[in-house]
Length: 113
Length: 113
Image 1: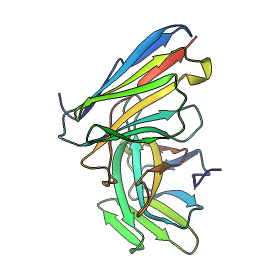
Image 2 (image 1 turned 180 degrees about the horizontal axis):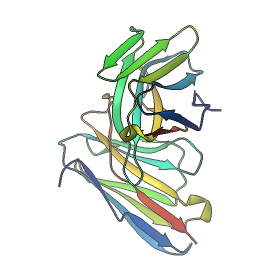
Image 3 (image 1 turned 120 degrees about the vertical axis):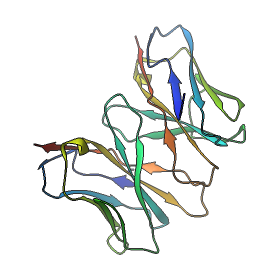
Image 4 (image 1 turned 90 degrees about the vertical axis):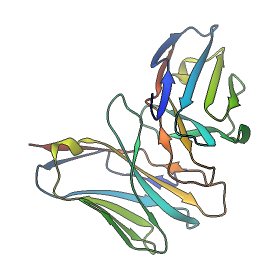
């Protein structure tokens, strides 16, 4: 059973607009969440993270929001740029556990010029 | 070389072959990981090494055999694989096992005929 779910396999957005990527999780013990970005033929690269003690973390054009009660997090990219076109993976980890990262299947974002 | 490198980038092998995947990290990290990414599935953690000691074996079949001779190098030895083992195999490293941010290599695309 998937503990981290990214229910949208793909998303298409116009350049300059906001991209919102969603992620849901089922394990209430998860307390640290990360977003990774992956270009074709490259490994995933870390983008931004958030601890469960926060509900928002911002880094430039990227903001991650966490709603613990809903077990939901989202990544906002604004303004979106064509270079943001990639697959975005949500990952979660459990404090005091094995610190394993549990990944979602990913969402392919396409930003159209 | 910087970051995490993996060789070969592509590998085609028969079910009776023996091959090895190599990963090297140039980041001074102490923890290294093998992940498997099959089509339309999340990244699956296979093995974790912390200070050259295997700390995690995520129920991986014995036809996959990891080796970590030192903190900078990680191998995955492959023997009598099945076609369903065809996938992208990603290596990652982190400063320590408890560090959530992992740095990934570009992966080895494996095809088992």
